[in-house]
Image 1 (cartoon, protein in one colour):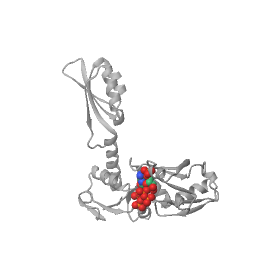
Image 2 (cartoon, helix red, strand yellow):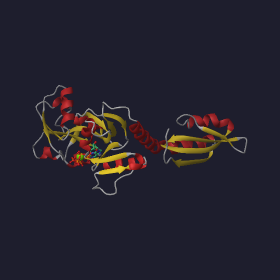
Image 3 (cartoon, helix red, strand yellow):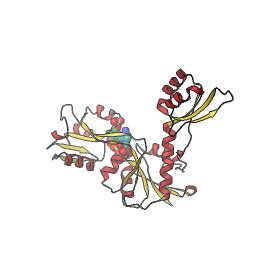
Image 4 (cartoon, helix red, strand yellow):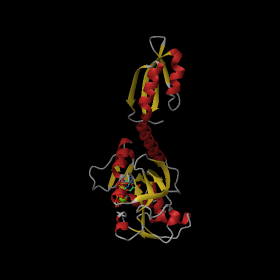
Amino acid sequence: MLKVAVPNKGALADSAAAMLREAGYRGRRESKELVVRDADNDVEFFYLRPRDIAVYVGSGTLDVGLTGRDLLLDSGSPAEEVMALGFGGSTFRYAGRPGVAADVTELAGRRIATSFSGLVRADLDKHGVAADVVKLDGAVETAVTLGVADVIADVVETGTTLRNAGLEVFGDPILTSEAVLVRPATRDDSTAVDVLVRRLQGVLTARHYVMMDYDIRVELVEKACALTPGLESPTVSPLHDKGQVAVRSMVPRHLTNRIMDELYDLGARAILVTDIAACRI
Ligand SMILES: Nc1ncnc2c1ncn2[C@@H]1O[C@H](COP(=O)(O)OP(=O)(O)OP(=O)(O)O)[C@@H](O)[C@H]1O
Ligand SMILES: O=P(O)(O)OC[C@H]1O[C@H](OP(=O)(O)OP(=O)(O)O)[C@H](O)[C@@H]1O
Ligand SMILES: [Mg+2]
């Protein structure tokens, strides 16, 4: 039975659960459940703290897990990233009172509060900077106000928490993160993991693309297909009216309206867009 680690709470938990549900797996009925057995799919889900997931997977105790790239790299675990999951996006950045520093090279001798000490020490080493890392559990923005640190390094999504604490980011982002699927670096080839990966890729594709159908005059079909090339090649079917064809193609969701406008201008009509509920490409 494939053993999968899933975030039990926090910023990644709801989206991870939604993605697995869309991929056809059983979820938990209430948030106190720590283990869920999905016998139909031969999978067992372990609901763990997101920070601990890379540790379990890296040790080989669990076969695969969903966590943040920042948490994976911070843990120093030998687990490796298999695929990005398209949610839980954030950056990991230095921040401080306005004007405190312009970039990491100005942090020598300073105190840096963070709950990601692995990431920060690696970044300081990379830049040859000797600074004190103050390891805290969370809410690190307050460390500057309370005088425990000169600057912080933390997860930034909207920037609201920083603004509320009177802090500003400085320097380049240390890391760009999102939720990722991780597996042990020394893994055996596993068909069960391949099935999970294909299902999750199916969810990503179904979310990123829509299906577009339209009718177009035969002599314009090449131009229309250039606007809607699809992933491989559009399906072109004959219509009863010999002068026209029906075209069906996958289109990136964020381009839907622009492509419909362009197709309409070209002469396409009966342009219909439908969601893709599930797919294997
Ligand atoms: N707005 C956000 N706040 C916090 N984490 C976010 C946010 N957006 C995305 N993330 C990602 O979520 C993960 C952190 O999740 P979470 O905050 O639940 O873990 P944690 O900080 O270890 O736990 P907790 O906050 O419960 O102590 C990281 O990968 C982070 O990049
Ligand atoms: O840029 P924003 O949208 O404001 O989000 C970033 C904030 O959210 C996270 O805190 P979290 O809620 O995980 O609490 P924690 O600091 O205790 O981990 C992170 O540590 C920042 O404080
Ligand atoms: Mg947090």
